[in-house]
Length: 277
Image (cartoon, one colour):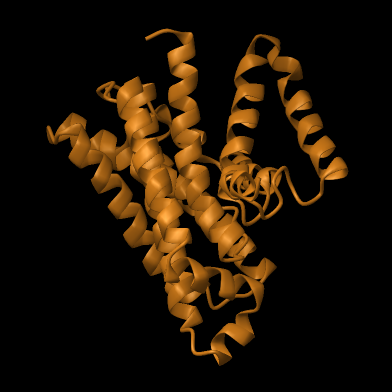
């Protein structure tokens, strides 16, 4: 697998994770800075199951996603009672707590030294297949009655409650689904890198995922995916000049926020634009 193939795999992994964040932040209106924690859970689950228990990689990926989903659901029940910026602050505590647990649970995660020897199961066909399937599922979910309920919670939480929506249930469901997507992305990342460390899933990773959603446009899945491609390419193609890479990355984000505050696509979708034409 060459360099270009590796970039495409990384694009698919980031896009899967960003779809999860987009569902919660862009379509449900819950700002989160902690989704790297769910990626970490998926990555370590897949790594431990394949290395120490001989579980098939496909089942390990699903197990990573399901564990992240369950944890997100259990965490969402108490924390999603918080509104606005308060949940964002709570999500920062989540990602740091998970990272510290992974760093200190030496007997299971091998601590800060990292977890090596993971089977390289994330090949190009595997990554592309997972991306396509999960993208199709996400499009159908957003356009379903659940998607309309998520958008109602985003647009006006109180009005949605008065119209009969169980807003608390839909908010927790959105977080659980987004956790599953990030868990699967983390498991795929483990199979791609063959080595994982807690530092890979720190606050910086969460910020990167959220910035992709804002960059692409809140409420636009196609915009989010486009932003994922742009930001991933910026960070990877400028790796040879690593001392300037984050400067360029920050410059791109600032430029798009100044020139187009609503993001690349705003709340529109590429396929809807084609339909109108």
